[in-house]
Length: 311
Image (cartoon, rainbow, N blue to C red; front, side, top):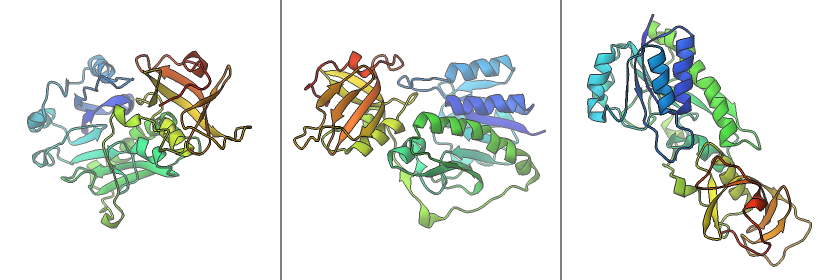
């Protein structure tokens, strides 16, 4: 049986490690990503507990710096290494240490959406399809030869939350479908089409700011859906407080506002608040204060006066 090494982080890495254990695979070592403080759901400690509970050797990215990856992988003595939700460069000197190679999982249909935050970008950009790619590691970002891909349809009301769940289901599957083929040298190995390459840049929490003056309603709605919980969320300010909008949709309002100021509140009821946008009306149905992102509130619990403005 193959000795499998893992570089893993976030819930996706946790699900991969868990399913490999449940399938009876031999994990010879794990390097666990230390997630950032702004991330609402942090799986670092859960991964540590999973390794401890199953007597799997591990270290965290705080303990092992990039310059030490070569020595850590050598100590793993793994036949194959899978990289899941990893955020640091693995140097070329490491590529041939596992006897059957290093493989990276990336949540897009490569060569589209190489780089950062593809799960968020595909929703923000209004795409209708994405997928998961298993690729050989490469010197250039997400440019390795393709081993396998699984396509995912993006529904009209898809959120990053629901899309993430689809990925959680297929991340372990794509590894389990291919690890034995890799060990036998019978896996697919296709070059990517460099004429079809696109990239997504890195996103930070500050990039979720809603601009009511420049964004139309659909752009705002896609930003809200693309940054849904447990991602940091699309946000605005109200009475100088940062507020996260977790749910919103474009509506046809009964009043025809030919005089409009984007961000102006025009209706407050028990279940929603209506706000003017550049081109129509945004109906907001779930919010929270930024300092308590997981404490969901009805919009009227924060937005309490018609004619006040979100900005």
